[in-house]
Length: 153
View 1 (cartoon, one colour):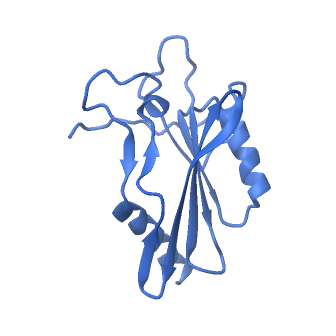
View 2 (cartoon, rainbow, N blue to C red; view 1 turned 45 degrees about the vertical axis):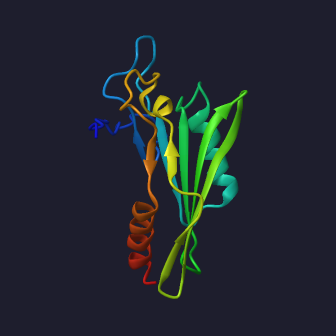
C-alpha cells in the first residue's frame, strides 16, 4: 500500500476550516490553499454549514476541490458526514454517510466515504496505486464512537 503524504495547511486568512488537507506542493499555476476542507457542526445550523461549503468550493475564496461536513447531533448518537464538490459551477453533494447508534450497535450507511484522488492531490493519478481515498466503515465507527464518548453517550 502506498503511503500518502499530506500537509495540513495553516491558513493565514480570516476564515479557516476546522481541518484541511492538501498536497505538499501546489501544482504549477495554483495558489497554496486547502484541496479538501472539513467543517464540523455541533451547534451551527445547516444554513451556516452550507454557507461554509460554498465559501470553500468558491475559486475566489477557499478554492478547495472538495469539502467534507460532519454534523454532530446533540440530542442522540447520530453523525452525518457529507462530501461536497463543485460541478457545473454549483456545489454538489456527492455522498451522505450516516453513523448512528441503536443500543450498543453502531451502524454506518453509504460507506466507504470516498475522497477523490484528483480532489485531494490536484492532479490525475499516474500510477495504479494512486487511488481515491476510501475511509472504511470501521474507521467511521471509531470516529463516531470517539465523538460520542466525549458527548457522554
